[in-house]
Image (cartoon, rainbow, N blue to C red; front, side):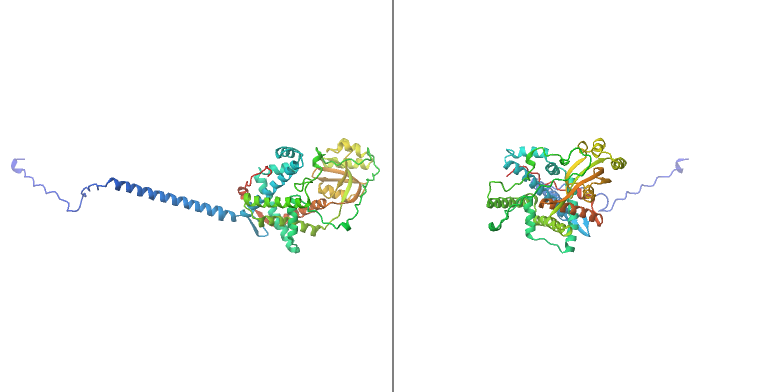
Length: 445
């Protein structure tokens, strides 16, 4: 190609310039702030952050308060006859029971200290805890919240059953009946007011000697009951906190009133329960007793029986013993050879027993109804299989405490049976709401 064939390049087009206002923005110069302005900005941001944090905390506290004070207390732990038992009622009842159980403990300690058996409550506490199972159970209950809660749940359910039956029968109780329940807690009996001109002469009740049934027994002398003997004589009298023997009737009454007022103050201070709510608790005790008397009648005597038995583990063994006795073998010999309880070594002798209180109900029923002298066919109780013989039976005048114990037993049996046929529900979460306060107090005031 010659030089003439070459073309001259065209000039390059000018670069397009972006219109004014388009493209990159001009750099903004940093605004100058004084030190005071910068510190004010920091403080403003800190204040905003703190306000937000406080607001969140207040919201959380408000939510917790609503849950703890409004929602949780109204949760239902049980329902009976369509009537709800709430967490609030459940927790209040637990606290009431804890104060009352603590009062029973203090009653026992006070009795043994004030009576001179021990120099202080610590000595009395150690002795009672080792020797008295009921006292030991009261103490141990304060560290077993689940058992305490279960007991209270059952009590609240039973209260509904009792009140429903009492309402159906039109049974109510008076303030005096409620006061009597409070007096029993403190083991206080007001002095009786008697007319000096009509004071009856004391009657001497003859001791009835049981007539032995003709049978091969080692001795006709009545044998003590199977109950383990009390290791110390001070358990024979019923403990009382007031009155002490040296107090006059007026001083006894004043001491009792002081104890009751102190009891109410502790209920309010430690359990947060008002006097009215405490009296409602004792009102239910009185109502239960009134219903028991209405249903089972009032008694003046109880049936006692002079019995002996052979207790074994199996029905087959009991039937073998029963057949041997019918064939004329010695009751005492068979009891010693094959009996499995503590009476075996004394020929199976139980002696005279109250058949209506303090023993297995099945055994008591057999003792009340068996033909005197005949060998009772084998029957089962909570302790095993029995072959029994009732050698004598009689009705004896009963004390108020003995009658009350019988009525309580019958009432408990009725409530248990009624509860099995009652439509009720319990929630599983109640165990999470058992209070562990008020704490156990063992110092006498």
